[in-house]
Amino acid sequence: MKPRNLNPNQMFIAMAEQHRPKYRFEGGDRAAFERWREAALPDVLACLGDSPSAVPPNAELVAEWHDRGLRVQRWLIDVQPWLSAALLINIPGDLAPGEKRPAILCWHGHGAHGKEPVMGNATSPGLAESIRNHNYDYGFQMAQARYVTYAIDWIGAGERHPEHKPNHTQSSGGRDWCNLLYLHATMFGMTTLSINVAHGRVATDFVCTRPEVDASRLGVMGLSGGGTMTTWSYLCDARFRAAEIMCYCDLWEVFGMRDLNYCGMQVAPGLYKLVDLPDLQGLLAPRPLLIDIGAHDSCFLVDTTLKAYRHLESIYAAAEASDRLELDFHPNEHAWGGQRAQAFFQKHLRDA
Image (cartoon, rainbow, N blue to C red):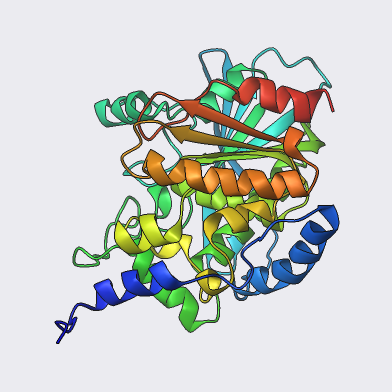
């Protein structure tokens, strides 16, 4: 008799090995792609659950300073009832009076510092190390490349982590706040994804009112968990004209079930029943998309990330949009490649 399995995680791995999502793209021409997208997209978006109620931002400019050729602003904005967010905006120093520039929402990934290193804060050894390890200051570098960039923390990170200043009075006992906040959200029929997407939309709404910003030329980019947020922000907000997803292209069977490399901020009930990650990202076609993959990424291993990318590539080909999908395959770890971003956003936000 075959030994019986008593390990529930192994059960889920076995389930994933046999699983074929309902809306896995099976190939075909443009008409087949459009039928697939029309059927899949509403069901996929429904997995997010409800979004929080909208509120006026009641924006408050807290401080403004100059840093290495940029003008940096810190705002506080309300993003939903009972919750606010700190918003950082990097404005190129060479902006002429009355000039408007394209703007890029820069989502951060997991880590102790939230949005800070992404936007160029290297003022402590920990922040500097984070930037060095992941080429993490893309919000700063893209502002130096003459874009307005902006960022907030997703809930459970940075200044919106319940145990970080000024919220240090509440302890989870060592449990992951990404998972705890996801549990809270689902009790109200929401997900942390739906909450974070909504907060990103509020930040974008406000940034679009700023005199430095051309609201018709918006992009979004992010690394790792920021790649998750970039995927969903791009899917849910048609104002974004181009997106760069860094180190978040893989198969849920592998990075999720096998490697346990995901958490509550990345998931939605029933999502894997419908699509795998490359199918989810394929729903972005035919819009411009740049994918970064690190050859030595230890979070998303190259053996399966390239397999996932090839499936995504087949979806863009069926959508007759192969020219709008690009790959930055770089020889680094879990990091922003930075090899194609400027040309990509130049093409789709400046030249288009």
